[in-house]
Length: 516
Image (cartoon, rainbow, N blue to C red; front, side, top):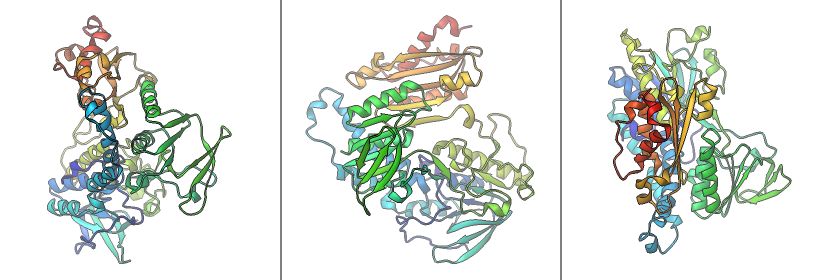
């Protein structure tokens, strides 16, 4: 497995946390015989793997420090297991939307089979193959909990309590990711709620599940658990997928209701209690009602995994996000300990774009710039240069694997207007496209294209519907490449595919306007 084969919902690894109960592995439990490396990467998740791989390919030596499973959040507790939980239900519903296939369906999902497939997807929570990839890539793996002891210096505490010291000649990259935020609600912390980790790794399905939060994790897990038979109640103060175009959250909410979920918008819990260990939970809601469930998933935000990294020894605050420039270098802001361009942060921990693919993109840029600086080579740091993560600002793609899927890139209409662009947005019913009618009977979905009127380029695009995730890369290329609309007319979509929606969006915008 290569580092680019390690996707995750939250970019990074939990290398700065205590070893999880599931981190049961017989491979490589060790400290490195060597103690000095050109580059040390804290966190062997997808992002850390990419950073280390990039510097090794550039001719430098690298060590990865990891306290849990190699592969990190991505492989075991986020994107991979969550999508495995979602996929079976999505496939079943897709078949139910096609005449001929629909009539052949004779039963419901086999829940245990879904869980077994999820367990296989996460390699039964073993990291043997990931460890082998690290070794094969020429990267040294050091298992243990890393803490800064000074500039370019770390102590690493292994599971057996052994402490070793590591020194970096050129750079240290922090890719420790993020963890779930628990809001300050009376009784919540003492009630042992689920976070995304428990939701994606559960071995049984609760009869009643409450989900606090309407973001990506909340919406995806509501879809998964409703599909698997839970009575799901979603509590969201500001609607579903509130950072997306408004119609995205509306369509996902309608779909969840059809699955049997109860979606409460503008409602929050004011108190939580659990009736003994493993007992049911009672939630007092601010609308005066009470909700009794078997488990509660909290999905209200993320906090950085920097609480026990020893940041204070290098003039930074514990528990803080690491603010970086576009080369992923942590900003010194007068901090003498950070002088010399040696500390980098990639993935969730820098709070730029909490998505695995963006974290890996950052890691590649960081790896390349570290090599260039170490060798005294010229840097390409203008926007879209080889050593910067320009796409983090206004060209971030994301797929939310609800049913319907939500695929988006770039700016929403509201974000574009807030940024000062003169915009025009055009919407199109994806169900009117010939390819959609072939894909599913009664296909429902919406597409939106946000156009910069002055430059006549696409600033953002959003697609909601079955299988629209596969439309997203074309939209990403249009946004990143700033392809003029009059050139997009020559990108002819094949027929009959859902991609024909691109032609319909351009027609709706108007050819005369796009030729200005």
